[in-house]
Length: 159
Picture 1 (cartoon, rainbow, N blue to C red):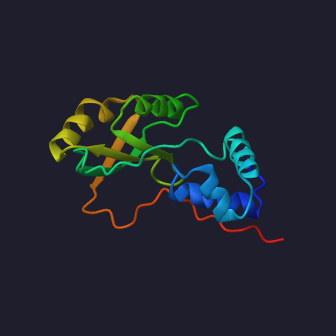
Picture 2: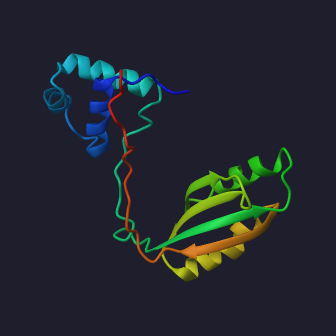
């Protein structure tokens, strides 16, 4: 369900998306509001789940994860319990940093981070391909990441 954001919420969220470590006083100054109002707004956004967390965004290469794999997974069956079991299984793998359920010819898109192609090959054969119900996996190795952001394209609401 969509949370009703006003223009002040959008400005606060835009600043937090750029730098979640900004002090409340700085945010208040930039949005021309009081510290109390900004603090309360942020608390409401946290309570409503609009802000899901505040994390450090790491450079995957600098922590030794030089290979990003995009894997398309096709399931053999689509029973009521098959898809949820696949999701539960991939949630246990720290290499899987995103899992999307898709419509169309492919059932899932996975974003996987590993140190090397050899590590992916091992992950592929020992873990991913052994999940019950997996029929086919098509893997693509990213040559370079040309666009990356965690910022959502918020815009002020129109009255």
